[in-house]
Length: 329
Image (cartoon, rainbow, N blue to C red; front, side):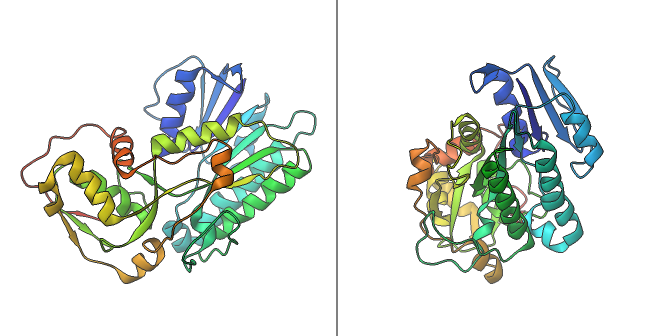
């Protein structure tokens, strides 16, 4: 089996590659070749199954070379984050939309449709959300990032209908805990909060303790990506799924952090709410996902498990008595 991961050296990509190499198989077949595509592939551990393709996903010729010998499964993770995509429209358009559509076009194969797992986003819903949300909620993106993700979802579903690409799109929530603030990722405060408290550093939180968001650890997210690739789907099955999420306030996450790191860690967190940021990322309502759960897609289970799973992905850090304040980037 030949498997491709785009964005392979990113936050989720690195963990996914490790999991694929450790498992050694996917969809009941041994992984013979694992192709990695990213701008920078330095630091990737050597493995005879790996084929490294450094370069931009926006290069159609590079995509043709990567796919020249055929492909069975693709995990399409690469993207320009929401804030950066809004500030640099052309870059977001090229990476998030044009490159994704070009990849879909090159994957078309009626005789042997490849499986494509696409990392979409809850950004497709926009910011003005109702008090409760379910899987039938309409997509109403209010940023170019969300609009481009939705466009790719539609294209993916259309090619699945045509029997040319076996597509599956997962709408990802806030994934934690990123090892460093994501460039252009306005929801980076979710990871910064966890990392700073774990390191014993003061943190100025840019949203209030009552702000609510949708959370998932990177470990759990990779489990869902792999599950999505494994699912046997009927030709007419839905192809876009909202992942189950943990709906937690900042206060609840701080409670879970205090449970792990001690009550004194609460004093590390101070609140300096940014009204615009909180309106966009701190008012997410409860979200019901029975269809996704029936497919075996899961959230972390609890705030305690979220903290444990998220922080297991970062190296241990000695906790100083005092540290420099952390700020949302």
